[in-house]
Image 1 (cartoon, one colour):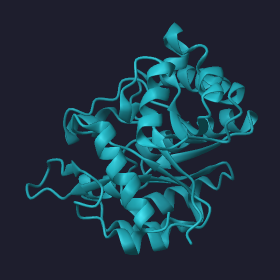
Image 2: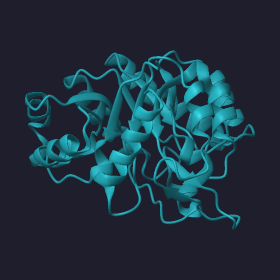
Image 3: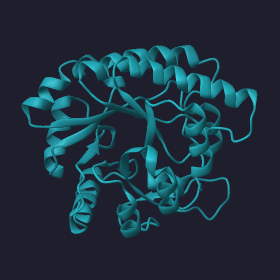
Length: 269
């Protein structure tokens, strides 16, 4: 029997309030979420989120930080705007990081994930700048006794493992998303998770089909219908790591997540 807790990314359900999130989570048939943290800072409807979820029996597995100004319109725009890359917006992202770290601490979370941005492979001023910023973010969360995890996909496993080895920060891990490896064309998810295994802190359950046109996105699809080799992939997930279902495409989110939950149950998760 594989030992993992299963949850849902709150943003996948696009809830307008904590109460709406609870209803959708209950409809999906699980009792845990990864929670987007920014709404708790900017939307008054989310101020009582923790008590509402707790009273409904929904636990929070981890948080998600969204850097300021990310533009996912195309691969080109996200390469320019993702994570900590943008100089003009870095002060805003840093301030949001501090606010999210405090929120995560108040929620007593132990893990927060985010996209670092497309990390350069070659030694350069841009690479040094981004790694310095990631180290600063790690320090902020470490002060609150919270680990951070970079989401996979925007670079291949070789580049990401090199960055992690260079940072040598005990507070930094990986949130492994197999679909992102396919969506961004960054290699085989099974081989990648094996290489990154020492750093894996959480796994997103998401599926995708690779693009046939270079320079464009692949397509996110319902779990079990894409290119992820799930049997081999799940066998490579470290024991005890939470599996969090993420669905960012389509208009049948609850139904698609229910399918993913049934898919995991069939495989003993």
